[in-house]
Image 1 (cartoon, rainbow, N blue to C red):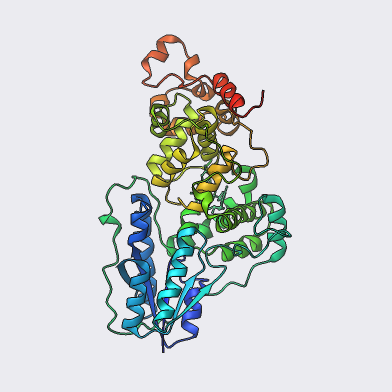
Image 2: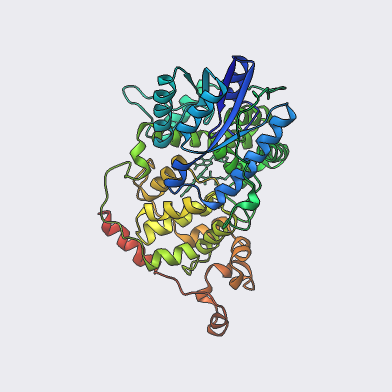
Length: 453
Ligand code: FAD
């Protein structure tokens, strides 16, 4: 018999319940990935993610070939193509990971309707994209947790399913047509520093990180220049690494660093369960409704370009443009600057991040933006991060700023955080803008808008 494994956000051979179930129920399996025109139509196929995705698909195909199989790639509507391949291959069961975003949930519904109408069976598998599926733990009388700490307590107690190895052999039926596996070199417009994708690279990166830096993660995760976080977010986004496996392997390493890292993985699950329960929070305020935001315009342009005149904000924004990735502390302070100091709508910022982030995903991006903007799940929605104090704490000697803002590369030490205080002569020689807004004015505007005075 033949089964079909439809890859979505689980582009891996190790610890993949979708592939495992397909292989255990059939003699031959079609490993399918559809370059989905729906994702393109939604404007979600940003070049940086397309570049990383190309690496992931090439690596998946190579891994399958080592096992006697290959990856089948199609282009078009994910549902129509899956149905077509299922019919061509004579597959009875179609296996797929349970979705979380509104888009993935609608795709699942459409798949069920279309496939079951044609006599196939759709099998949906949980704990593939997240370590704990949305809805697995809920507070009494509610469909999701709105606060992280109690969620985390339950999440920890729940424990994870056991880890599955990679299959040894994958037999793919003859005669199933495949488009060419896309190559990264064919992607136009990606940022120069986009990391390499693919399961092999993800596993290599995690293993190296687990051996050393993981230990110091708790102490160093906020150090902007130290760059001591795992940088696994794009791998988690595309599912080249399994979150369940990461939890197990981090815990087996033990220590405070591992516990802090596992807590971050729980944050990822937390945002996914919010989005699954409230799909509209991708574009509407999760809590309350504000209509007094300032819109897109010149100030937002300066922010996007990394020319706000606040060096640490600009460094973060330029890292994003160069690498398609930004340090979490940078994301926090850059987002706070846009939404609280400039009082610009969080959706303007979230859209820009999604255009560039390799790890950009609806759950983590939109709900972190809402968290920072104070419309989401932060229990202190009116906190404002002051870019200067953030810079002094998390980039004390200015190394991060000098790395990303070349105009300021010659300014020594922490003086780099306040170029406006340099002697006039020196200041004039720097091609670097004056602060876009006075911090005290920004704060006063924010407090007025929120009725805090
Ligand atoms: P590590 O510190 O090594 O953490 C390990 C993993 O835990 C990460 O890879 C990630 O999967 C998860 N994680 C860590 N922090 C968070 C968090 N706050 N929320 C959810 N998951 C987390 N993360 C994304 O994956 N995609 C996004 O689109 C995204 N947008 C963000 C937007 C804003 C405004 C903010 C403040 C944060 C956003 N984050 C997003 C969360 C976080 O910044 C990144 O996951 C993290 O910086 C990735 O780097 P890392 O892999 O080295 O993280």
